[in-house]
Image 1 (cartoon, rainbow, N blue to C red):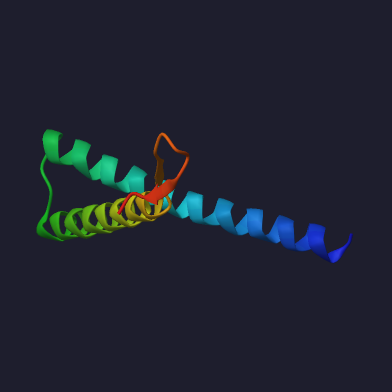
Image 2: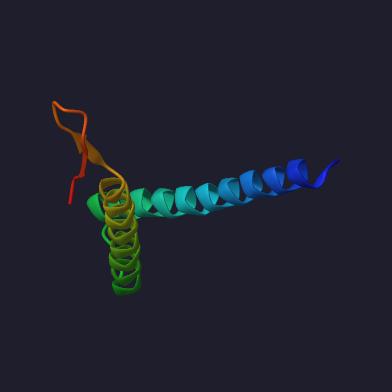
Length: 84
């Protein structure tokens, strides 16, 4: 296996690992939300839920800003203008 293929596979593996971690956080957020509706949460669970929600919001905003930073508007003359 050459170095390029190895590095590419390793990068894909890292992305997969990150997605699995994020999915676990989302699953936990959803579990806590369902538990809050059915039986209620302890103080520790409420604190955990707030922390997970804050992390999720921060990641969402970071991704949105990155996407908007790379968005351009093209006018009728074909000139690109940065959105921000």
